Image (cartoon, rainbow, N blue to C red):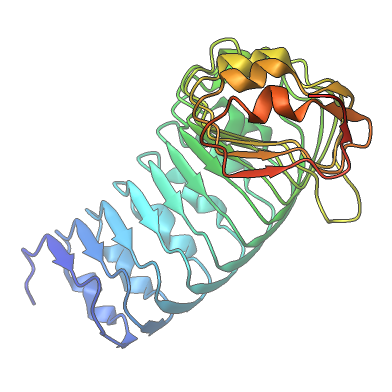
Length: 314
C-alpha cells in the first residue's frame, strides 16, 4: 500500500517464499534489490506494473520459470540481474524493446535457445553476461555493432559464429571479451590491435584457426590473453609463431596459448613483461623453449606450463 515507495533493498538476508505479486501495486518503484536470499517461485507478472523500475536484481536466489515476455514493457529498466538462479526457457525478444538497458546479467541459469537479434537494438547496452547457460546457435552479429558495449561474457554455452573483422573499431569501449567454451571459429581480427581499452581477451575452448597476426599495438591495457585449446572434441588450430607484439602489452598478468599449433622459439622478449604471473604454453611439440632466457628474468612468474615444448640451450 506504500504507493510512493521508490527503493526496496532486501539483499543479503534470509527471506524466503515467493516474491509477492502485490509488488505490482508500487507504481513509483525504481529499485528492487533482492540479491542473496532464498526467494523461490516465479517472477511475478505484476512486476511489469512497476513502470518506473530502473533496477531489478534477484541474483543468487532460487527463482524458477521463464524470463517474462512482459519485461519488455519496463521501458525505463537499466539493470536486469538474475544470475545464479534456476531460470529456464528462452530469452524473450521483447527485451530488445527496452532501449534503456545497460546491464544484463543472467549468468548461471538454465536458459537455452538462440540469442535474439533484438539484443542488437539495445544501443545503450554496456555489459552482457550470459555465462554458463545452454544458449546455442549462431551468435547474432548485430550485437558486435553496439558501440556502447564494454563487457561481453558468453563463456560455457554452445554458441557458434565468428568475430567480425571490424571488432576493434566497432566496439571502441570494449574492456572484456570472454567467449571461451563455445563453438566460435574463423580467424582472429587484426583490428583487435586497436582495442585500446581491452583488458581481458578469452577465446579459449573454441575452434579458431589461422595465424595470430594481431600486433596488439594499442592494446596496452590488456592484462589477460587466453587463447588456449578446448576439450570439446578438438583443439584450436591457431598456427604460426607467438606474435612479437605481445611484448608491448606491459600490463599482462596471464598468457594462455596451450594446445595450439604454434612453432618456432619462445621469444626472449617475453622477459620484458615484468607483471607476468602465469604462462601456459603446454602441448606445443613444435615450439622451442629457451627457458633461461625468459624465466630467469621474470621475477614474479607463479605458474609456467611448457609441457611438450622442445627445450633448447638457455
